[in-house]
Image 1 (tube, rainbow, N blue to C red):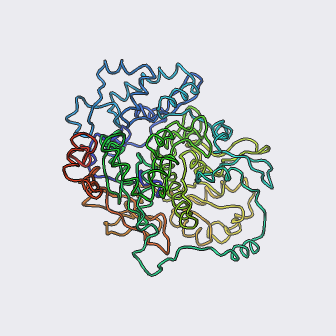
Image 2 (tube, rainbow, N blue to C red; image 1 turned 135 degrees about the vertical axis):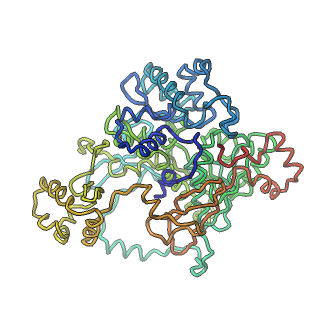
Length: 633
């Protein structure tokens, strides 16, 4: 559920500028009672031109994700040779997209998501032709070197044997006692100082449970004392975090820390590089519990403020390239000079423990889905790739990975005094999303994992079945569970069937009763099964008025309704209940403040005068707002 927090949020009366073509079409079909039955090709034409796949000279698809950044879409059109042509045709670039769209020069702006239908269709048609002039491999190099997010669609098997994956340690060779030499995912999360050790894991020594448990009991673990009866205690109370990140993964990592009590300052540019879709709407989930300051950290007063904040922080988090990190003095040696006690965490798109040919390529969740075979598994074929989820799934996993690396580094510092540098990447976390399939060995055979939009499961015991209530249930059983089917009313005799007859038997039987009835019967027999639920239905059923609690006592689903959200809109969103420790408080965090709201207060806390602050704002080194509205209309 946490990984779907960006998909499940509901913002009432969202301004029209934020509605995608798909959302407009869905609303139209609901109003007119038309089935949601558009074909794949029709759906593709409802996508933003900078947020979709294109066919290339070699017959491969290439995924482009550069819709919301001030420079990415422009660079994309420039390398395609289309920029000047489109500007001549009337495409505009607004200098300030945080003013109301009614005040723009035209009905759209390059670098803003989503684009209106005319420009989306017009640009996409030109891009289709331009991309056919080169192979996907050529475009990958061009996009990577120019700093444009995009990647060729690959099958998982290709990714497992990819040069970059091997060079960086994203895929490693291990000696398995059963299968011999295997290729498996490398470290998902690591500390820079011990990453190399993690590339050479020791072969597992097989022992029985009693022996393993006896050994574990003999190891005395020294942990910090925990105030078990003090409900105000959080694991990270008093830890100061400087969040320099953008988009989702990095900011979400810092948001994880905040729910355990960390004090987080979010530092963004004085002039925004991303549009308000990317900052404000995503920020409704990842800006919670943070103070916001806006400063140009490259030079002048902004750089001075940045260095002061670094000196005051216990933890610094940034999703940036090594070049950016060194330039700002946050590489290992630079940070030692500024703040030798600070822990630094880097999140990015393509890096592993070692440097590889694509380590400095920028990208997002969707780029990684394309690179590692996830989109082709979901879509089923090279010409029909499909996202696993539109935004945030791997992003949120990566954010958790970053938070975990920080937790380990903090514990290491507590135990040994050693200062660590945490690392993770989107592409490393993609392995978790497909861990059942992400391996290879000599006699594995074909990669035949279920794929495509019509796939209903793995086998007759783990798949979707249709029921009399019109719902699908997901059965998730294994061969060892088959004997339990005899305990389920209506499934008597199942264990005696040939395997080839099981699917037909279950398909017929499950249609004789409603889904909720079958779920009760199956779960009573210790067989895993759930109703295939719709995210909107879950939100409607499990929402409650916001009451300053984190939802950790409400079970598997918990949403809060904020009638007085700072944005001025009624907002319903997921509670921070994913991690539920028994010996630490999880804080119900304050709603996100307007970007720049805390600039003045943070500056005062650092010892600057009101006059200094006004001078900084006048020079452009600082800002206390990107626009008049919380969510630009």
